[in-house]
Structure formats: C-alpha cells, structure tokens
Image 1 (tube, rainbow, N blue to C red):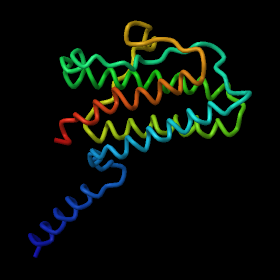
Image 2 (image 1 turned 120 degrees about the vertical axis):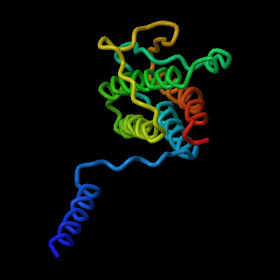
Image 3 (image 1 turned 180 degrees about the vertical axis):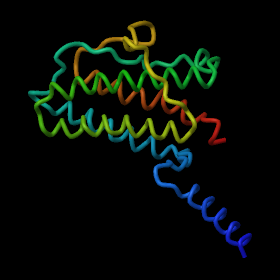
Length: 181
C-alpha cells in the first residue's frame, strides 16, 4: 500500500508540474496570412484618417523609418535570421516613430487609429514569436540611419511607410516562415 501511495504521489507531482501556474504555454503558430491582412487594413484606416485630419495631426520633427523597398535578389540571399532582424528592426523603428506621432497628435479621432497601430505592432511581435522568429533587440543607441532607413517629415508619409512595410518585408517574412511549411 505504501508503494501505491508513492506512485500516486509521484503522479500527482507530475500533474502539478505540467499545470503549474506561471508557466506560459507555447504559442501555436499563426500561419494564416489573413491575420496580416487585418493589420494592413487597420494601417490603411489610420492612413485614411490622417488624410482627413485638418489640424492637430502633424509630426513635431522628422522621424527615422525603415526602408520599405525590397530588392528580391538581395532579400533571397539573406538567411532567415537576417530577414527576421531586418523586419524586427523595422518594426522597432515604426513603433518609435508612431509613438512620436501619438505624443504630438491632438485630434482625438486620429489618436484612436494611432493607438491601434501601436497595439498592432505589439501583436505582430506576438505573431512573429508564434512562428519561432525571435525578437531582435536594436542596438543600445537605436537603429542608426543608413541604407535600410530614411527620414520622413509628415504624418501621412509615416503612415504610408507603415502600410508599405507591412505589405512588403513583413509579408515576405511571414509567407516564408519555415514553421508554416
């Protein structure tokens, strides 16, 4: 009987270990590109709201954004980690730039679209993690200007870059994620 109690106790400990609170369960891969399409549509909504905004909707100073144009021959020569780092750096830049826009906008209708854009960048990070694409931290001083970045001085340019980045580099990365094939 003591041996049976020991076996039950061991089984109970194993179950408790598996169900212990505080341990995150692994994310299921999100391979459906309709999720990305939703993010793109919401970025376009923000862009459309920007075009109708008359006042209280500008950038206080130029911001650095990721380059959105893709040279496919160069992109395809990069390994998955380099592609992921480029996209992660771009998302970090967009988060910084859109955050700067959020701080300067006084138009309440536009603020909700900008807030949604910032939330969606966070959600995109979760999608990337679900695909085993590790988060890449930018350098301590941020991402420096260079051939992978450029500067925009208007909010409408910034939101256009946001849409183009999602439609371009992010879509390429997600559509070729190894875990989805």
